[in-house]
Length: 277
Image (cartoon, rainbow, N blue to C red; front, side):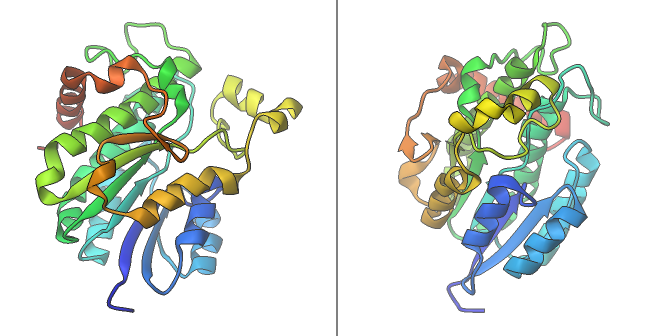
């Protein structure tokens, strides 16, 4: 490999904007590590891009821990970690770990993975953690005493929006805590891409499969574009803690997104739940 090779880890790479990003980021100067839930769906993307691949179901935190061990064993450093896996899920269900699925799959699992890969991110000298969020964060509401919606009424958009809001708070938590290691972070809303998004949520999935959807959605290539741009930009301290709405910095965001006590409190509660320092 060339001396300038960068290691990029991309989750949610088996379809949609993740698969598009994998194809665009692949090349001789990139050591590409792809992660997906389905080995069968991930295999052709890995073969096409020449990437190494790992599978993990984020609804089981034990699999996230195994994934982190596998990646850490495979690489000495990580230049860009793209936390792109996720979706929207029925909040009435619970994961294998007992959590509300939007909370675990969209926030808690990438929080755990990123923390477990911190040494590899620091070893790069400077690195970027890129979190795929959503304009849906505007519908979110974080209650540190009810992260799993056990006390509050939960419906699909609210639970999903809360998890996407957490992605932004996690991004700013990294900016607050890890900048001395030159680990920077950004969050991005890719836009309403016409993908398999929402397949695990009856209401949102139905909306995305409506014939009218084509009038309000963008293509997976368009949705992947801001992720690709930021990944190629890499460890830039000027974007540390910034939330992008597609290519535009400082997109529309929930007022809670800048609440420092919530940023710190969510980090502490999440760390307690997954057992990291």
